[in-house]
Image 1 (cartoon, rainbow, N blue to C red):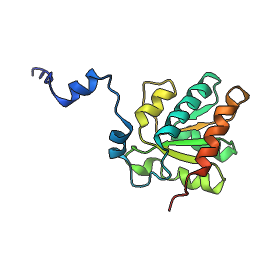
Image 2 (image 1 turned 45 degrees about the vertical axis):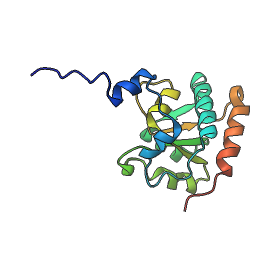
Image 3 (image 1 turned 30 degrees about the vertical axis):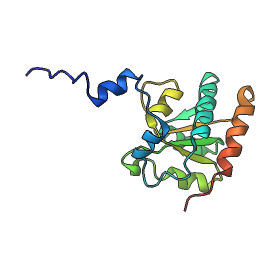
Image 4 (image 1 turned 90 degrees about the horizontal axis):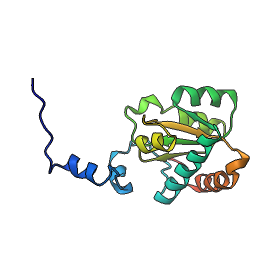
Length: 153
């Protein structure tokens, strides 16, 4: 069994050559049918910055199990869900829980970028950002924009 070398001119090599970054529109191709309300490109960037600030203060909950546990305990915050998670059954109950408890939630296009914003090499499909005085201004701005998004059908 020999390893097959990757084609140096292939599409994967070109994506890696430009830093592995994919544009917002390229990420939209992989969205789930339930990914509503979807954050705009600008709101997505603001959410990533808010998540990075929250990580420094240890004010995030990461992963379906942990987020679900703290929603049930009554914690408040903004839920950020990845729109490219498959199968959707993994986390499709979380938006319903958020609506029952009047928690704001929003979908972003990439679980890889969501995990990276949280300071992890591992992709994550859901993060809850809790409010904190250190980044209150950024949090309030994100919260306002998330609440202004149209509700899902």
